[in-house]
Amino acid sequence: MSDFTIHPDSPWLAPLAGYSDLPFRLLAKRHGCGACCSEMVSVKGLAYKNSGTRRLIATCPEDDPMVLQLFGAEPDFFGPVMDKLVGLDFRNFDLNAGCPVRKVVKSGSGARLMEDPDKLVRIASIMVEKAALHPKGGRVGVKFRLGYDKGDDTYLDLARRLEDAGADWVTLHPRYGRQLFAGRADWAKLALLKKAVSIPVIASGDLFTAADGVRCAEQTGVDAVMFARGALYDPSIFARYTALRRGEELPPPDGAHLAAIVREHIRLTKEYEGDDRSFRKIRSIIPRYAKGLKGIRALRGSLLACRSWEDLEKAAAVISEMEPADGLPAPAAVDDVCQ
Image (spheres, rainbow, N blue to C red):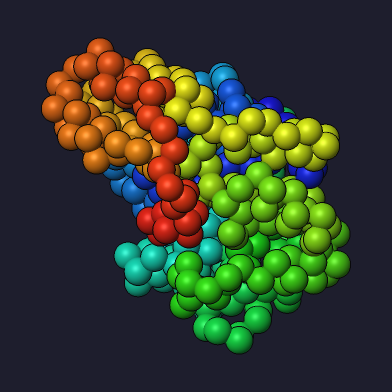
């Protein structure tokens, strides 16, 4: 795993549970993503050698640089797991202290860690210490929210403590843990965080379009932006963002563009995974790309009838002929995804 530079013209892909797998990361990279996070990976799952968890850390040279995001609530698990990961040549890591989904927070992980900042900083310190053992040096970031309970703004003090502990960057989703994805992300808090620490600050939250990313970067002065749910509609959001930063604007995604994206995603999934599980997964994901186009219901039906990768490509090819529906879907209507 190589070094990477954090700067506004190099957008990130968020650690999207169920989506930021190796094929999708490669798809994002090919469409302008500067650094991709893995899906959030359970430290306990790695410690107990869970086969499903090991699948989440699959990578390849084209995936570099990749940031491996870990989650967990028990500090004692992190040291041994980090030793194993560094031994496998992983050197870029992130700690999830921002996922608000119930199944994560009920274990004390994700955003729930913000209720115990001492433990959070202790875990981050362990990760920093272990990452430094990589022969080429390691880097560690932490992704968190404003606080767990609404109005309990602990993020500034936490960020300062993380900087003192050796964190290389911080990522803020400016909502509270209990908010889940309700309301609006408070970008003004990103600007405050940027002024509070000297390490890079990455922005997350309500970046549904490339224009959102540009606006957020300009308004807050953050060092980079991280696309999450916005990338699930159109993985070329990264290229669109960097084009806008240059003062250019790419054509809006039409059926032909989305069909090409789908074909590429199918082929990457077949090449790097290729089993029944990945087939069912990509089959369920394809309709997301076609949201906002007429005929999506018929598309779902034809996809469900597919039994081979070739059938899947043929069924998805009809997207190129689909026309825009009356009014695009609201980006916020995307299913809440743990990140």
